[in-house]
Amino acid sequence: KTPLAFYLSQRGFKVANYPLVPEEDVPKELFELDQGKCFALFISPERLQAIRVERMKQFNRTNTRYAAIDNIKKEVSWIKNFYLRQGWAMIDTTDAGVVETASRIIEILDRRKGDSLAASFVSEG
Image (tube, rainbow, N blue to C red; front, side, top):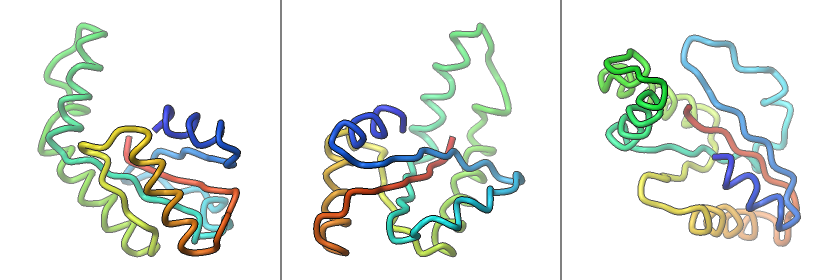
């Protein structure tokens, strides 16, 4: 998420990156943004687990709830349902690189309003 935010900002976009966490209140400011400029990034539970397992290895931790596949599946399901309720464009980043994801976001913005110079996106943690 962060490399994508940097990439888009270097191209003139105003970008915010907010990680959604189930059972935590979503800040009201998120809903005050132009919802047509919000993008919902998601990743497959299996890929997210692999990332989290590697992250936890850096801290010499294994078998954490943070990296447990059952918890991740519930989290991804909650997030996708949240995105659907908001009506945000959903982009699967499981196998997509930064440039490819940025291109999809820019393409969607261009389709919606021509040359828009502002984008915000949220994603799971």
